[in-house]
Image (cartoon, rainbow, N blue to C red; front, side, top):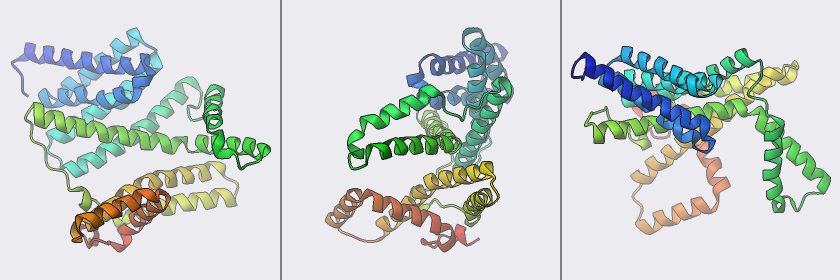
Length: 319
């Protein structure tokens, strides 16, 4: 414990507790800053673990919850602390126990996704309302967004435009669980890097180095996630189980967001390894951005196939 005694520890705990509550309240009262607040909220909880210990972190999280309950809506306060307060404490435990940065990052993103799902369950249990079903206001908002892009639909007949809007809103609603998981993972990713910068540059706290981006990989057994998604879709469509099909489609949606990142890692590896002149590299980048649909498809396929084929011949993937 890094503290000047019991009194100093309590004062430091009080300071970080106020920061947890403050960032949570900003998310509640200023919706435009919600994502920024969710990214910052885990940091003070993490610092409580590092500067003091996990007991102080629990005390700070519970106290911040009471502060937020006194000021803001009870349900939103509970969800914010349950998700991002606990996430910060878990991140602090990983850092304090010197867990490798790669494993810490994957674990924190996974925990954030699980906490997001738990938050949805808590909301449903307390309110009996499904937060994964779009409200009428949200539906109208999406329709207005599509209406502002009317030029993209000029080649479609007016009656088909109505069907297109309805289908788009339906697909958007169906994939809300996957979007929730991806957003929670991205938020945890940003929180991790902010914590890393804060600890290393401001507090001079050394963290294990992250693996180079061009060497990151998915383990071979990640393919079972895709198989599970496809299997659930087939099961749901064949025996009329819409919930199973919805779960399967959301699993595939998550992987469709993950695979391009690892496909880009494969491309970066060969981009660095193959000795091309600067003009050729510039042309390569220009062509990639000029044909984004094709480039995105290539990245997706590379990311999906690399765990099985091991394009880079990484030793870890051979295990």
